[in-house]
Length: 155
Image 1 (tube, rainbow, N blue to C red):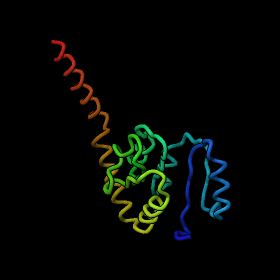
Image 2: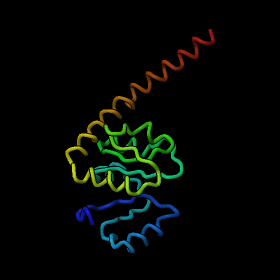
Image 3: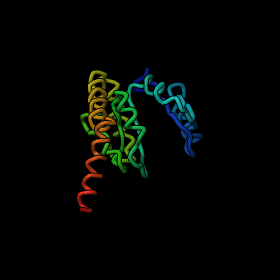
Image 4: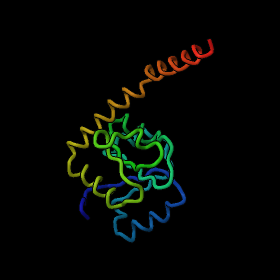
């Protein structure tokens, strides 16, 4: 194992969970992988992780999970699927990868584990970006401008 101290936390449930658990046993990495099932304590989970990964391969809307992780100051790795590239700024707040490319995913995870100072820098940039883009006052102002433009068009 290239990173023997790494632990992987897989949060949530789904149809692939038992297959993933079997695969972790077959690869003899099951002692490094924790399957939590469904959780509602998101802030506590985000507090204990160093990196957020969402390797979607089929479809994904605008991921609230990635936004929450980035707002908590975590660098993110995601795939070029759906709304993920709209959230992660590739090379600044995290990395965007092609879907279904486990080698690229492993490379980027290893990169962050080997360069914790870069991970912290990306995490800080992620927090700043989320605050700037998703601050409630900014969103309220954007809605206000949008509604005013609609009113202006009606007049």
